[in-house]
Image (cartoon, rainbow, N blue to C red; front, side, top):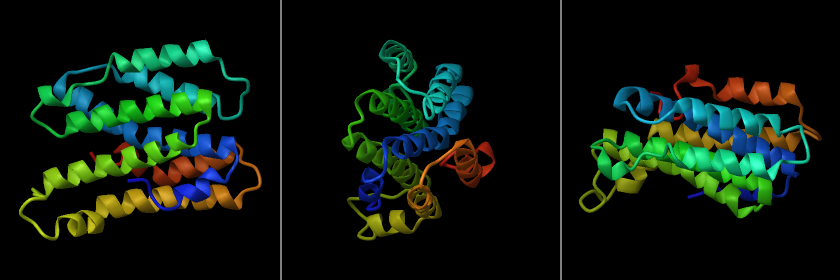
Length: 196
């Protein structure tokens, strides 16, 4: 589920919306790296290059659709199939790829519904991981959703998204320094959104 503040983001200019998408990619990227290194799958360099490309387009126009499409195809080839693994981390790696693909598509089509998807992918990543590490069962635990909502990882993800949107809302224009400030605020010692 997208956070409530996403509607505020939709009122901002495209560059600020793209910054939100890019920062989400950065937050989920270490989850892919962790999965790739520990399960000997994929190629984190492909994802890293695509995210760097997103960054380069924050302040560069027009967008090259051919290059953007080629990154989408490359990422598609490094997505794990969660059913082939006995760990939720495969889904976390898939989410890291999916959020990058959504961000790249947003770069091309500027579709505001993609912002909902990007926000949702990030919260779903936390949600699934919390269910796994806390051994939560929807069918037997009446406090299932409440426990997820109150978990530090979920609270942090929602606070990070809201904080980014609030920061972007207060700026008339954003620059490279603003992006680096936001990156440093969400960095988490390069452990990603799941603290891996």
